[in-house]
Length: 270
Length: 342
Image 1: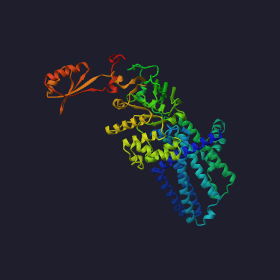
Image 2: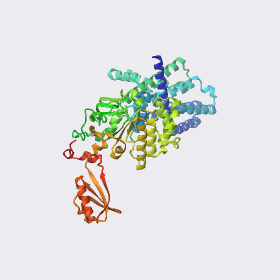
Image 3: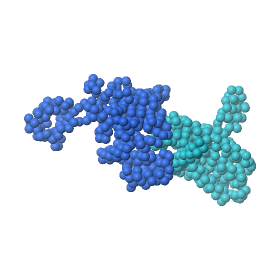
């Protein structure tokens, strides 16, 4: 029994790795990826220009611009590449080759997400390296003073946030079109990044609408947990417990979205 | 997104069997060979359109394919061939009924390990090389890496793509794509091959090569089930066929028996007689002047002798006399009353 579970786990890992590798190679040939990367590097550069225009806290401007550029870039890659992934496989019927083998749709979807996650992580790594290099070169007050523990925690949580968005894009793409999946994911991200405002609004409105807003705030993935923008700007420290809880939450959202996508993909033609 | 198989969805209840349909469509019923494929009372329906209307595509399809045979699956475009094939390949479960491959449920792991599948107009990730695609499908088939690496050269050599193994699939011709499609289907050495329109879009040389490849694969003891809407492709390599139209099995048996139910025509080519005189001959139709003489069609077997006698009386030089195979469409278009009794 134990042996069979182990074999099954190894087999699943092999399938996820094989599908993920093919997906990774497919995405990195996509021109959209390079357009996003170029825009992100330009945004990083724009931070330096904007800092020259600021009278005070010039280093903070570079810091904020950089973090925003990194977040936007990772989110765009995750959402734009993730939303079209499953639909393209089914439309072009490349999925037939995989699903006619002893491969479940959940394993296939997990593999697709793994490939997307690898691309997002690579994009994050390159941009984060460029960002850190830029800070080291351009910060007037010294890199160490600017980029503390909170800064590095924020960098990791940007990746977690992008992976959550990517998983949601894959989930939406399992039952709708690419363009709608982009719209839905962007909508969930925007609302999910403002959950505290949603709760505040629920308290202010009260009654049935307030209750509905409360339920929405509870159900929608909370992206605020992985947004340390203000804490980075003001240098507020982050505890290990907060980091662990935020990462665990991100992992939970990713697993749930991929699981649901795998179940919903069964209904797709193929 | 679900696609509605439009033509099959227009299934009517007017299909009349061309050949007697046994309780289950088994072509080699008398042989002791076990069945590789068993399809029992399979219905398939889809929900289409904004109102999600239920459209039935397959109607109580029954079929049995003996092991180690080459079995042709004929039907016009939109008849439901690909729908049934996707069910056989285990890509989805039928709405009702049972499909078994080698005694196992078609959607289960055991059946899929036994099956190799070539989709219609195969689409692969075109950024992969031929070798890369085979490594990918080998892993998905549960093969170990050493086994994959040992098997790839053999399979590529069998389909004649050894030279192109490191070329990206986007640079492959249509014929090469079909051959790499066969290669990925046989990589894990399956007992049962399901080929959906393997000759589709190939030129005459490509079709010939594909026929030879299929015969070669069958010689290795595999069971081959392949679909086509072109009779000559099936006739060349299969002894037995099943025929589907509008989602219903309408015939099953030896191909020759099936063809004899179609309109029988004979083409006569001759020289030494002018076209005007030829048009006056009783029984000759569609008289066409060609550089090497005249060709004409004679409907029915009985008129051939009469037409030939008249031509010889006119001192014509007979170039050839050929039976003309009816197309599937011609057979299906016949009024039911016009068919011979089975």
